[in-house]
Image 1 (cartoon, rainbow, N blue to C red):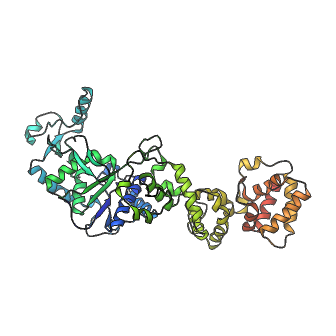
Image 2 (cartoon, rainbow, N blue to C red; image 1 turned 90 degrees about the vertical axis):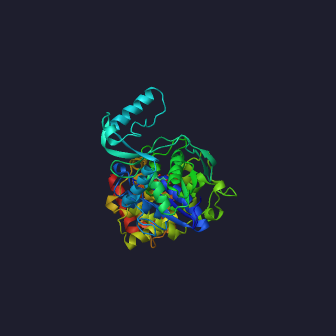
Length: 489
Ligand code: GLU
């Protein structure tokens, strides 16, 4: 039996801290298909694992998916015809299904304590036997079981996996997939919460999900889900298991080991959402013409499950940086200036509500850095000097160390020359300084302007000096040069 009606897909993250980059990757592929065929996309929050629950993580999921432009049609925040979309608000939905399975003999109660289960597992491992529940409770009444050791008052519900359980299922991307034989999986916990396996089947059914597109780590769970559907007489959704995102050494990307597993990291580092989207698409997908730079709209148009790559996609951050640089250069100056300003707010260089003057400064400075950066965070280093008070400008150690003996003389001549300028524009600033330092003091242009750069920006590397001075303004530029001159004695 196959579901009929409109195509409905979902992404179902668990709010266990900073959202994982895999959530965005799954949302992207779900959406590519949904938007192509004109169905609905559901965001469901799977928060039944209370031990791992983190308070603000649900909001972060919304924030990050919205930032990436991966938006959903139904979800806890916006409601929909199948609300509620948060599993903790659906607890009364799951028990009746578990009871039906018990009544039909497809499930049984288990009273084993966690300690007994741990000992059992240890003994199985020692004896090199396959691990799995040994069915001590199967066929026993509560009273019969209570007489044996390792009895807990609170029962869980386990699936009774039959010997002939179907282990092969059809996957849209992979074709026929064979999964290992499952254990007698717990589906309802002692606290009355469902485990993932029961909740996912019940919710996918009740929310009329037609396609389950998720990570390949769930392949081994799929036979359990197929069985639950069969036992409950529910139509089976189509399955597609996406290849996992992996580090260059092929290990799984984990939030504990890799900062790039956290979605917020990408925003903090100054990646653009369109670049990250393109990158995530490229990790698991190839365009018919092999193009590497493409928009989400183009991906949607061309989308075809057969072009999802199942062998060893690699998460190569150098590639992402390259892509990001590409998108940075393609933006209009106004657009980029807005994003640079946002990034400067995020990193604390600018206040939460920048003034009009600060915004204007950011706008003027953006063309100076557009060609020089890949990530927005690089703008932070290059432009921070514009947004500090003259007295607060820090001179970096390497910049101070780069000053030579002739720096005081160069600064004195520069200050005099700049004071005489009628107009404070880059071309005039440059001409005056060349005359004073190269012709006047006989300095090589390469070294002549070093002290000025250090004085004005506090750094050895900065956006073009004369333009920077123009934007910073006459008073600040002169005040900073004088301050450095004083420091040098
Ligand atoms: N809550 C699961 C996860 O976080 C969802 C898996 C699924 O899509 O079935 O990965």
